[in-house]
Length: 502
Image (tube, rainbow, N blue to C red; front, side):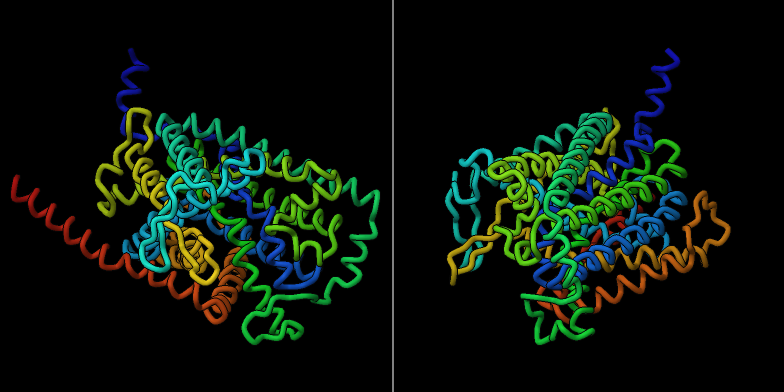
């Protein structure tokens, strides 16, 4: 009877079901999707050599770990559901928190869920040829000259994956945790196996690795970035900054563990630890993966890898004939786990917004499984919608995905929010010096300052050299301001009505 009474009392609260291992698995699992197996091809085309490829990933590693250690203080200080939404709200104002939440729900989280689910479907096509973005159940229906809506077999599979994972997570955090742990362990094991394969290849034929690093700092066959000459110091700085679009996105979402802070046991200890351990683990593996590529393939081979699938080419080079199958299976496991982590975390951010009256009210209510079922459902619906629209290039007759464009637009916007959040660490140290801080950022103020300077340089270069994708991101953010004003007015009117009713 006593236990049943306690359960009834806690029905409106999150269940503390996530330990340190679970939290690390969420951090690592959400970071590792399909990017690490692909984006090094584009980065190598931008920087042109083995040494600069490693420098590009080192920059990503330093920024990611510095950001994670900075967020650790905020997470331990405010261990409640909502993550960056809460930190920006407390450090600056509710408007800043809402603009992040607005961008998260419209594009960042939902668009990433759609993109990763489609990646799952694409690589499923390596095993099941009938799954393809060109095999249509509903042929493209054009909406003007540049856009269309379609339903291919790949899109259909992505819809099923998104819906399935949302339903599972609505049944309780224990189910989401189970999927996350199993699939993250599996994907990390797969990466270790890839590294082992490369080590074997290196021992048999070290000449490829030595040749790559014999000309480590000589860019070759680079893709032009505007009118910038890559051979100059300034040109290489621009190339390294622009390359962060791919590498930072591949290492992104590490902060999603802070969204589920309300479900972490001993959060004041486990949140900072999981951020530090998870990001360090993944960045270490990412650096080793790139050494793996350079041990098997010449730089020119990485640059021209078919469909940018560098890891697949590595496996096929060492074990001819099985690369496509092996990497398709690994990426399917990896992306499934990533969709699960993104789904689990995102719903908690919308829950926090709804609690403040800045999202649908029902999203701020926990279901019988003590998870935000309505928030998960709304996130699922919008992610499903984003899978369907296609972009159309009349000159080539090729179809793209609308969410890909949207994600390009908000990569720089997401970086801007990271900068603001770390700046909020400094602001809260000044405005709330006596607040309880179970963990204080290691290396403060130098480490967070390093993050701010490095991320700001990358952001400025992106705004100067990637104008077509950066400025639209700002427009998406600013479009949330009138929505915020309307929500605030609605909340004020509701309070007036409630007082009048009393």
